[in-house]
Image (cartoon, rainbow, N blue to C red):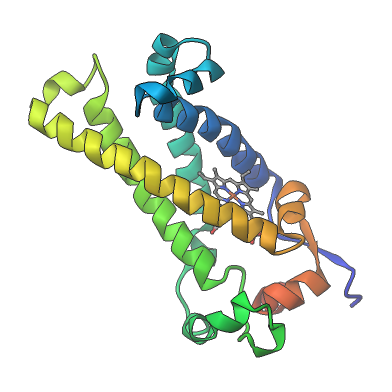
Length: 207
Ligand code: HEM
């Protein structure tokens, strides 16, 4: 088979899901961060006014978490830990130095991506649980003020941690040339798969 021959990496449904999460997530994050400090309030301008931001943030947040949960369920089988992951982790220096010849092969996702996947699972659960507990005027009155304070603290901490995780995610996506094109158009070349995810190619050939 020719190295330039294309193979599917992301199905249309998953790509639509992913890019919808990016748009909905942007509104969720900007409105969320606008509540952090008075000096961040201008971020609520993305939806018009601070009052509208307060109303819209939970709904956009729920939509982001539901779509992300759906995507995580669909990608679960690619993100199981396997025997190829530890050797890759031990060789992570070569990955950072981009010395491809010294990097042990991995499948559809490398351990760095698998760890981010797990972080996304934790964030989705934490955001939904704490977000519902804080949601005025619907659910917050069901909890004590102290519980709501704890929920707010965890929710805000997760917001900052998820932002860091997303910076890493986008950095990884831009660092591996051809990765974003794969998420945009769905396909990658066999040569790309051989270089970055060789075991994916084997899985593909055994279909
Ligand atoms: C502009 C921002 C973003 C860019 C450029 C981007 C890029 C990408 C790319 C290129 C992939 C495919 C990686 C591969 O084929 O190896 C991917 C996968 C993924 N992205 Fe993003 N992404 C962005 C934002 C987000 C956001 C905001 C979320 C969630 C809140 C997210 C969640 C995911 C998930 C769950 C996957 C599947 C990977 C896995 O199963 O580990 N992405 N992204």
